[in-house]
Length: 234
Image (cartoon, rainbow, N blue to C red):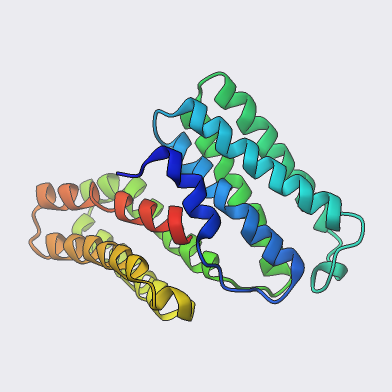
């Protein structure tokens, strides 16, 4: 279990691979509190969720103030840069209101959009960072988790879900092969990554049994290992 009082502090000291441009580096620095906000809105922690989203909002405001009028390369040719900055700010404002009403599940879904906007900003400007691989894994994991039970109940359900799990397995491999060198030298990162890999392997093994009850149990074990890895290193 994470100790709530230490979460934000841990995030601030987590190593991040340098993106070699000031805007992406600033975005990565502001990403720690954002990850904490996602984590806290996914649990019953209204006060801590509000604290985390407030810190994320402040970090993003600093980016907008510093770079909004005159973005540095490679974002200097991005005609939608200011628009994307504003969209993320709107996400934080809406999530803050939802957290204030203790609508944590709704705030979590709202905050997910900020990740997509940031990812699109980088993609438009040919910037790739480790978070993009974490996001790709997350997107496929959501497909498996959300659609998995329905897929199982459909025609050739076991085979269809096996194919989706194969894609997830491929993306889990990339979480290791694309990891920054400092992550690969970090014992905590390697331990957390192994738990993610284990959860995928167990789902694959369950699918090979053709036992839907075992598959459903394995599906229930996918999210927690990823969440822990994302919180600290995502």
